[in-house]
Image 1 (cartoon, helix red, strand yellow):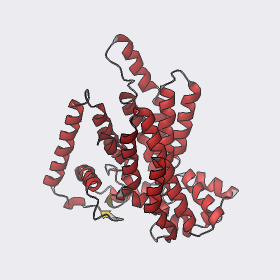
Image 2 (cartoon, helix red, strand yellow; image 1 turned 90 degrees about the vertical axis):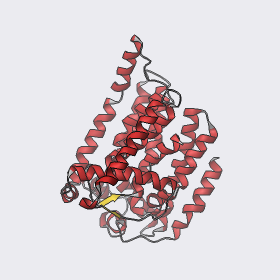
Image 3 (spheres, helix red, strand yellow; image 1 turned 45 degrees about the horizontal axis):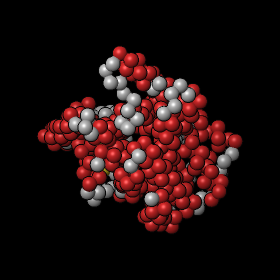
Image 4 (cartoon, rainbow, N blue to C red; image 1 turned 45 degrees about the vertical axis):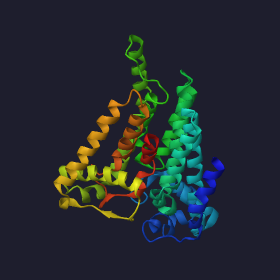
Length: 348
């Protein structure tokens, strides 16, 4: 399975080593960034941790760009190759993780294959500036794997410390991982089966489930604060849209991502925000569809717990970038589905 996954990913994405940088963010992150272009230097390492990079604070991602320049100079083939390798590693580890969690090889292979090869992955893998997606994706899978190991060996402080460290590294690649504690709580429900069953002893167990997420939630909160500070200008630019408009666009975007998963055509590098032109009936229908699906998976959770886990994984992981707190002028972006779509694949 791993060999087929790697071969398929190379057939699809290996061509990117012949691609150039693009004049959309690649210049800011790598091609025309003097500090990054110098490679891995002492000054560069300090700069990565103390400066915003492209209106983001993701020091590990910045360091990875510096390593690229150290190894390959400003030849775009190098960073493109690294993106493909990181994506390949994440796809294979996702397969191994799901097989370990569920014991089902072929369903796990299906999830990993759709994640690895879906057209919505192109923006994340083929765009040098989106190194933060593939790098944070790798740390996401490693974090979940470390948590599964910890969950199966209770009272293991060392194993929990590994979870915290990997999660911290992931946040320093891309702050979108702030919802990981929520994903871990979903996995506690299924397939780890750690949620309480209603008995007196279970309430203590449930307190523990919440308690062990608190350090991770504190890290998420810190990452949110840092992100708001470094993206202050972009936030102010887009906040002239009212809350109802942002909520309506969020509902439409959730449904649009569903449609793109099933029928991925008309993909674009930028989907302009509709602003006040968004029709009320369209937003209302999309919100109703989301509500109906949510109720259906909750009702079915006892016989098919994976439906609820997959669906709320999708909703929860998209929440930071769904536009309720609008950053930039886009309605949605293909790259935002990189990790959330795994939930939909699990549901399927």
